[in-house]
Image (tube, rainbow, N blue to C red; front, side):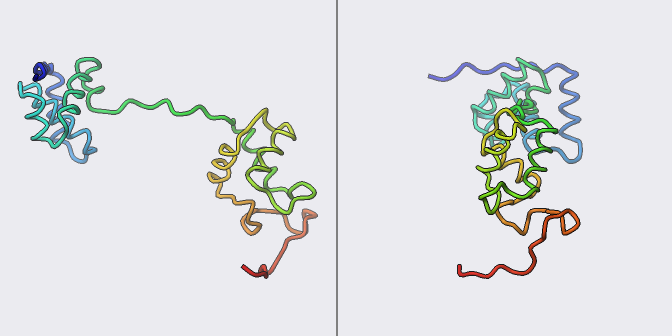
Length: 172
């Protein structure tokens, strides 16, 4: 059983824009392929025939046609902007956590770990709650690795915190 042919009628204004996109200089490949598919759909070609010409799947060609009908040219050619995940920490909270990580670790700990940072941030009431992954991403974005002492920025002798110098020695 075959599908009913997809009838797409592209307005003259949209046809002009399609031609302009196809003639323009550098464009994302996805946009160009979608524009070609939409142009050929508007000429009355079936989705499988268009799919063979533009090297897309028939389902993708049909989806482009349906998106054009539902939301116009822009919706057919470009991806929707994703909402993404809501940020868990605002800027002041991030700054307070970063300041905490740049200070010496609590008594009894040799260095900061992601788990320790998350626990201490909540314990010190810097944030109401925070997960290890959020802390990991925050540290990664600031290129900090507090579990490696060499990568943590700490004040020198003038700040009252002695700076460790020299190499580590030990067996690996």
